Image (cartoon, rainbow, N blue to C red; front, side, top):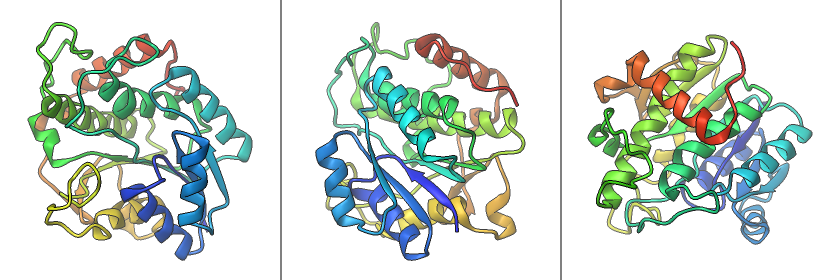
Length: 257
């Protein structure tokens, strides 16, 4: 039995992943951006061990979330599922940051840096990550004309870069990125062609399976199989630049290896 934290588990892929883990007998902590949504998540996944609330758009709330999670005990795995999508306008968070990057990337970095280190990390990426620009210097979209689709693609690129960077930085931790497919979530839309439940299976498998294939780190997977990636994911300079940017924005560095 494993202890697993699933961010953004009030609905969609996060909720399905939590439900699958509970069905397998694992101890699951749910997360949502508000207490109301956290209670709704618990109603949808009643076997969960705990629920946590925290708005990932706020650095202060991410810190509080990490503290609350650590008080519950060390997790065996964390699934970084929470994200906002490509239909979003440009919105600044309470910290003055562009919110797609803040929620999709920076919160995952900060939560990872603050949590007692789990044995496994799973980051939700997207096939759209292949349209990310590793040379993009304007992470906050302050100088570029806003493009929600590109902002989302870049955030999913950086999520995968983060997974690969942690696999390299923390060799004792299994860290991978997952492409769930184009599935019918609020983000994907009702006409998405891929299987919604199958979209959650790989992250569950990476979080708890003892199969040798699930214990290899630094990969990008689709339906449990290695999948085509942006070639820059494995570029150490790209990885280190992202980590440095996240450290500067949050004032928090990653734990030593």
